[in-house]
Image 1 (spheres, helix red, strand yellow):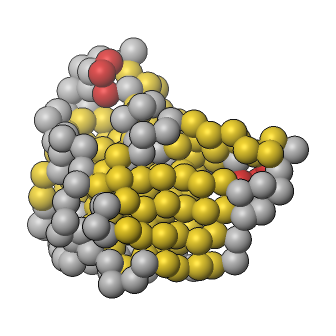
Image 2 (cartoon, one colour):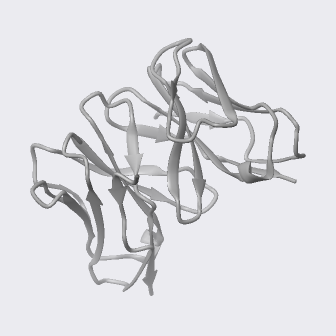
Length: 112
Length: 110
């Protein structure tokens, strides 16, 4: 059973606009949440993370929001750039930090 | 800079062959992982290891085995490759909450 879900397989956004990628989870024991970006034929690269004790973390154009009561997190990219076009994976882990659960990914296309 | 390397970027093997995928990390990380990535299924954990000679099954260990004889090296073994093991294989290492991935090996079994 999928413990981390990304229900939108794809998303298209105009350059300069905001991209919002969503992720839902079922396990209330998850302690830490991460977003990864993946280009074709490359491994995922870490983008941004958030601890369960926070509700927001910001890094430049990227912001992650966590709503623990709804078991939902989102990644906001603003402004979106063509180079942001990639597959984005949401992941979660418990306090042990030695097992990660990934969503199925959302393919983002930023249109110039 | 953390570096995770995988022995091959592309590999073509025949059904029934034994396949070894090697992964090496240079940051002295305790934890290492093997995933496969398939369209629509995301990253699925095959095995992970939290120490030398230790291994734990992930979500889809059937048809795979692993070996970790040295801290920096984690090998994935397909004892008898089958066509349904055609996939992108990703190795990762971590020391806390953040995983670092290798470039992946695209394995095709014919």
